[in-house]
Image 1 (cartoon, protein in one colour):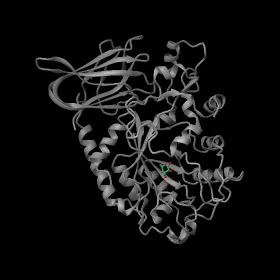
Image 2 (spheres, helix red, strand yellow; image 1 turned 180 degrees about the horizontal axis):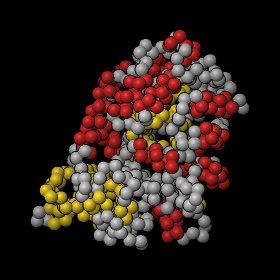
Image 3 (spheres, protein in one colour; image 1 turned 90 degrees about the vertical axis):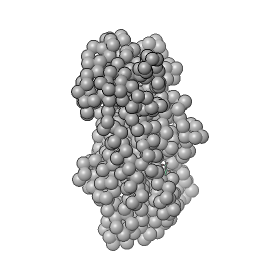
Image 4 (tube, helix red, strand yellow; image 1 turned 135 degrees about the horizontal axis):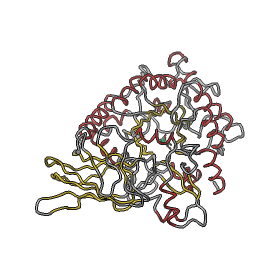
Length: 503
Ligand code: FUL
């Protein structure tokens, strides 16, 4: 994608935060004459669109990989599978949705069609669908069952529609893009509200050996027209793939990054690699929105990270992986390195051949939820405590679910110190901090100190970006005094939540 088309893409598809306030938008153009400080000021004022802000606050979203592969025990089907193989004997989408909702997940995404082209709904576009299967004598519709369950249980619903289709005869010809648009239209008009559309980057050969050039721009226009609240993820303008399927995000994660990161061909070329940046999946050193990177940008965009990972080794269900389901504790570690690193977690939980989430997965999700709730229900400072910063212009009373209130510093002050004095010493090894990203992402570095008898204030941890949420782990300390020092920030920092915990 050229620079010109990226800007065009931005203008057409990135909705402005408020049509009335021209300065506030989820992208900004950098002029060649902008000084370094002007570029930083512009970066600090880029904010999420409404749909991006809603999505970010979900924190936990779930993927359901389910389809013909579930019955052939494969990860990628070839497209020539017999639809008669699809026959879940106990399919219960409410069980799927209830399971993830009870574990704290706020939205689900279903693989309506994976690369094999088999459609989980009775589409008019192809016979390669559930309509040709023995399940419910061909009258069933998995998309409807999952969408209805999400709407009943009050959680978000999203669809994964693979552009790569190894079954469609028209793949690799001019007829494929309209065919894909018809599939998208069915999904976006027959199942009520859709909150996320997930496009994967795979672009292999179809049954005729040809590759397809995808018409993403038309697909985006269609989604914006039919379901304007839906975020378009990965091969899309609203949500960025973090770059690994390990669950381990970046310690420095900027949501405001150069527009060159919207280059679809670059996203696609990376997307089939398990880990694009580091062989061990650890992207601690990789940064996308540093000051240096902003200086050479021609535009900046709010393009936040989504971390997708499976609860099992594979994306689809395989009986042999029943013993390899990640434990509640492992999921907690993933939570800390995804949600705790300014990302939304998209955890895949693949239903089995019966059409149920297996007991192994249900149990580990329960363990994860119990552990997470026990850690985060025990916060210092306690409810009601007022926190203030050294050069603050306002104070904040700590209460649950008050994300939209925040405190900030005097105009022009980009550093501050927040001091906590607890009545009694507390055992802590986690610190959580949030910025009010509706105003922008600004904090660049911070430190945590605690007071130790005979030693005074001692540094116990340091971090870089915060964004929507940053959770830092540090060796256990027992103290009644803690400080969070904001060392550097792009404009005044805005802090909406802070807390110390133990696990
Ligand atoms: C990848 C696909 O090829 C995998 O099968 C899976 O769906 C994953 C989430 O995206 O690109």
